[in-house]
Amino acid sequence: MAEDSVYAVLGATGGIGSAVCRELHLHGARVVLAARNQQRLDALADELGGAHVASLDATDIEAVDAFVRGVVDRHGRLDGLVNCVGSIVLKSAHATKPEEYREVVRSNLDTAFAAVRAGAKAMTKTCGSIVLMASAAARVGLPNHEAIAAAKAGVIGLAQSAAATYAGRGVRVNVVAPGLVDTPMSAAITGNPLMLKASEAMHPLGRIGRPDEVARVICWLLGPDSAWVTGQVIGIDGGLSTVRVRSA
Image 1 (tube, rainbow, N blue to C red):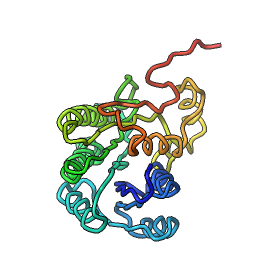
Image 2 (image 1 turned 60 degrees about the horizontal axis):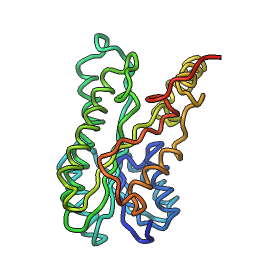
Image 3 (image 1 turned 90 degrees about the vertical axis):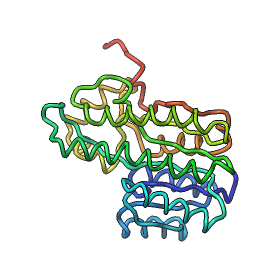
């Protein structure tokens, strides 16, 4: 990607979000960080040499609009926007409380809609790329994933419709759909040896993913090397959603 390109990252302080920020910074891009925790934002900004930060709740559509307008006002343009905000709830539908379901939709689907809405408005005159985060659970039936599967499937539908809407204006919209990744969000799973072993066995490549592996694909989608790619869902899941291997 070109040096001095401007990219905004929602959920910048999470495991995948921070890996995206580091990868973009490594390639000379100007990165604008947004997340809820100011202390973690400041620490990441210091690590990246003083990146611009904004504390916001990405479920607030108007706040995301204001954030993106501020990025354009400050830097003169926006080349790409990625939404790394999300949550995990692993419960069957009947065991999921209504407030838990609504929070899953807010943190995963509402934030994605806010990103598309704000990003498209900012980039329709200059072109650009929007990348959203789905999940392998939206592509293959996994037990006890009903809420997250519903929200992430909505993200896929949103991205494909938006890709069609904005293609003529040079705005690309794509999705990455990871399997289980070793991040703080998944610590309840990865920190339990039995759950981790079961999760590793679910992925045909025999392990869970790393944040940097997802980040590199996101950065490719954000940059000019993927200029002819839009409306796609790219699985970064060790084969979970598409591959079945014969047991030994």
